[in-house]
Image (tube, rainbow, N blue to C red; front, side, top):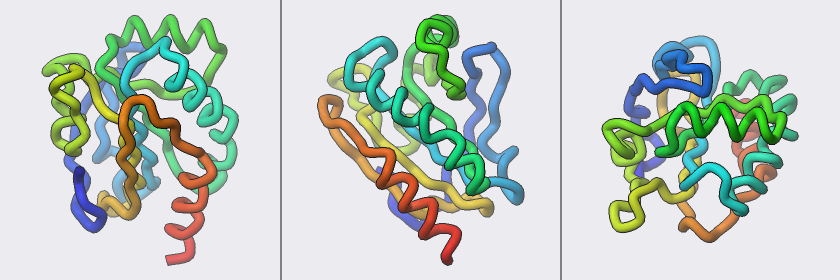
Length: 154
């Protein structure tokens, strides 16, 4: 996994609306919470995304852009978001398959998807907090909010 203090690898991925999102476009203006998850439409991922969606106002008020990433296609993300009425921005690490997850050291090649990796990237593009859990383990958004609070205290 990419260690804290490392410059975050830049990437360009498409969101659920087929719009390109470049990580470096946030440098100098916003911190980014980058949330990798295994697959859309799965129970654990759905629970995490629902909790994250509910916490979006808290992240926004702290000046943090939330980007979620999986190997699913933009079309899967679009349908999942519409079905759940979420406001998340979901990015497709579809091709090359899991390329960005690999750059962040959390791609699980035996499963063919990313493990649960979370990275808080500051406005200068440096990883300031991270976590890595296996596919069946669930994360807690309160840990992410605490990391954001410590970032603003620094």
